[in-house]
Length: 246
Image (cartoon, rainbow, N blue to C red; front, side, top):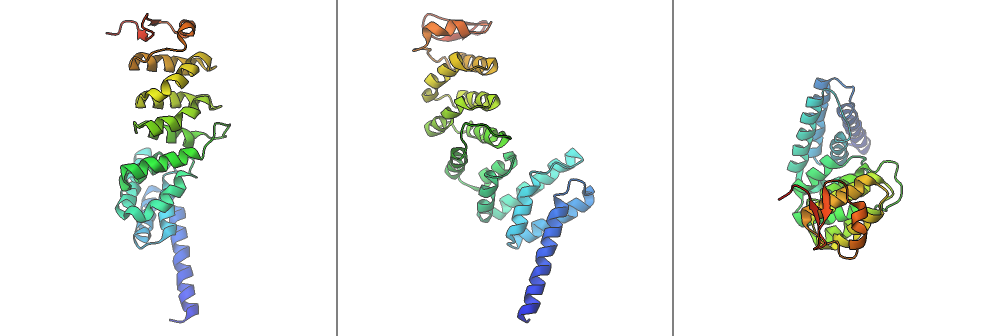
């Protein structure tokens, strides 16, 4: 095969991959045609085509109809990427930093990497965010929510700055995550949020967390009563108690 013939063949292959990726990721493509294209993309990915791997990852960002088939296709893609193994991690890592929604991408990374790698990757992604305004904070929130399942000191410490995020929902999800981790490092910053956050929803979620964790309000005892919602009391030991709880 001559060099011109080789490059012509390679270009045809590239065009075929691109065409199948576009069809597989087009939510308006009829279901049967979309799934045929998706299988071809999976086959190309198995053959080592990076463009096909990227196309599979991109499928997670598309919401097709009917919903039941969309979910089935995403499960199919998830299984295919998992079977491909560690060779896909560079592209998955890239997508964790660029896709608007990363829940499925996180799931695949977790199924391939070790728990330590998964934790470190999420912390690395989180470190690239700040607490300023973002047009679409979904990726930030989804990263915070994923870290909530890793009850480690360094994770709690990495989340604490986001108690002061400009986005109210990010702050709320950070409280939820820190409460789930339950590390003492978050106690004082969450007390501060309870007394100073402008959002009633955030303050009440902190109150709920302190009641559930039986954390002391030391340092803020004199301020707490002004912020307790109905159904809670501040006892003499400096803990918040939910009325009616055992």
